[in-house]
Length: 323
Image (cartoon, rainbow, N blue to C red):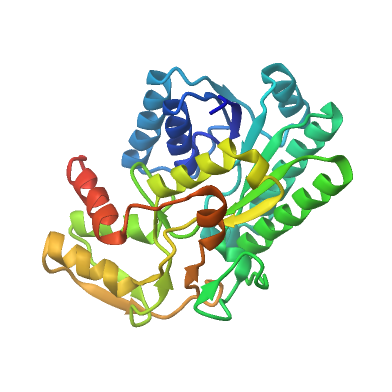
């Protein structure tokens, strides 16, 4: 396996720092670029960020403070580091923040990516550019299982921003020859997350003696994916460019589960806790399974953390934290 020089924009984020550590462990040379900007005032989450930085430093992964919306800075960064792979993760962290401030969401998501692509164009760099999109691009799933070539119709700003970046990347590829891959993950969970994902909110609230809020009846489907499986799948995209270039991949566990399945695991681990059922949010799409046949057959992806074991690992990790 050829070792890669990989630049990760937004590399201090939840996905980014896990991916940096995983790829460094596989022998790749990693550089992280991040603006160190987040919306967090929670001390525990600040501690998580400090732990991310500490882990990256232990792996001697260099971190550079840079706002990728600054096109001159990102151009210099790419020119100096000369990566053969660029992973773009710099964006507003979740759909809720995009809904609250759509202008900021578009600016952090779409405009930051414009700067990266323009830098690659100016340098004439043959850099395998990997964009992290989202299952949100599909909008309301029209069937229980969605493939990469199924229709996309986002219903919120976050999904629209992600789809816009996909289209922009493909256009730059056609016009300027930039090789690309697009990854669509879903319902991620794992250690040191500060994005207020449902999987973490439930654990944190229960451990703090609070009740949890469940949207609707608890039968909503999500393709819950352990961050470790996403890292495995992404490494296959990076390490097999002849097969992955100019392709879009669903990279999830590949089997949607009900919210009530999460509750069953939580009840076995924590016992009783209060549940409040709340109305559905019209800006949250109905989802289901993302079919992973393509990444399995082309690249040999093999997710190995089903919800029952992966989520229990996360619960055990939380129990070792000071809440």
